[in-house]
Length: 335
Image (cartoon, rainbow, N blue to C red):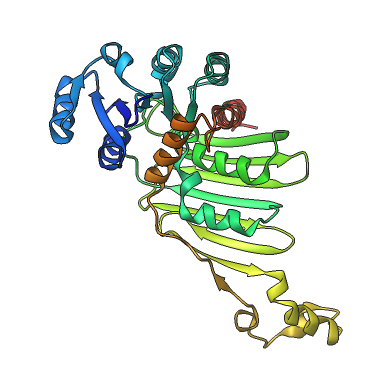
């Protein structure tokens, strides 16, 4: 591998354009090519970042060390499979694949070839999630809301694979389990796939997650609430802010309840609960999640270290999303 990491992006839609921007601005990195089946898109970005333009990856395989795949999900396996066979470190935008069978084949192919394969679950690098991880909470109940107006960028997949997949990955990462039962309901309004969905995940340990996603809202909201025996956390992905209410910081409130020997909480009428509770703002760093994701991927490409979001995690997210969609389709609205 050359001292200056040679990179490329294939698929120059909304996300691919951001990947190209970041590669072009990173030190020690050379953006070699912008690739898209639409030559006008490729030529536009190639001109902007002074690199080659192409409509196919084949001509660049010998001169690229790492590449981002941001093509539509249905083409992930075909495109990434070619890159893996060529030994090119590959970052696939979420979801890893349109179904678990295709995702598993990619994982196995990368393992056999010894090729770096990472998945673009950028919310893992959101400073809100990093702050949450630093607290090392053991989640017992997680609630997520991810709603926005329809952008029409991912009409080929439903809202579970389009939007909820972010929260699926976060939930799996925080809980750290793979044994669970998933159920869901959803409604398709504009096309053949669900546009609104709610899922309930019950893990073998007893932890529970409730996930809601909609791409038909009139506002954008991305929030997560985490309840554990020691803390409650409320976090806003979009605003990059959050608060924590820790048990050890509220021992005086618990002590008061015990000392007064309250047998019924109604006896605390007149007490201002909000003023009694110690609420702490979370310390959150201001970083761009996608840039942090790409920097982590390039570190793995250079060193061979395990990716921050490895292909196996991408497979786990697809498996859960698939289980949720299957439950949605099986739901009988007529009883």
